[in-house]
Length: 92
Length: 202
Image (cartoon, rainbow over all chains, first blue to last red):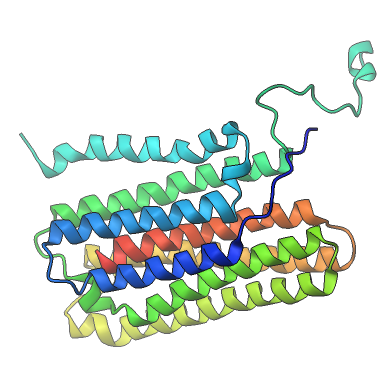
């Protein structure tokens, strides 16, 4: 089977980014912004952190597209689930 | 055995553009995708119930975030020690691998200890103080289901990592097995990053 060789990522660099983003997340909840802005910032920061873990620690950045498709497939289910449940929150 | 089967016995499947670098890795990714669907459903369910509820408490006020911020830090550090352990096995440095894998397992154990402390504190003091209970309030029930399901994954990860540490030490496992175990451990870290945001901070 073919092996894909790639340069080792800068793991400590990723660690510091994760730490900085976590500190930013905690800082955001104490800012005098509106709830909606805080929510958007928190979700963006969480997705950035999750992406860093998946791309560098789980080596998804260096893998074949197939594994990326497998990794993203649960999001399709989540979007579908949200769309199906929205009528429960906003009934006609 | 048929003639065709005998001819291909022990042969690798033919390589295609979809053939992964490692079948074991693909297997783990498929398992993790299924697991992510379960976590995704739990988190979306939590969000929908919260949004539809008029009496949902502010999580940061009930749960507190200092301890969970420390737990998040622990899991991030244990992910780093896991990749450093993988790097050590790829270089054939067994003592370094044992040190980093040991630290990863220790990180997981401390995380579980802190979660047990958090749960005990919540059940005996904080929830009664806010007139909430484990079985009667959606907030408490969804919180315990979600964090409990994740805690079970951390427990599984600690056991899995311990088995990998023993197998590599005995020379039965190599770097590719450590990488597959690492995928599971990083997934557990990734899910906690989302839980920390969606359950504790939002």
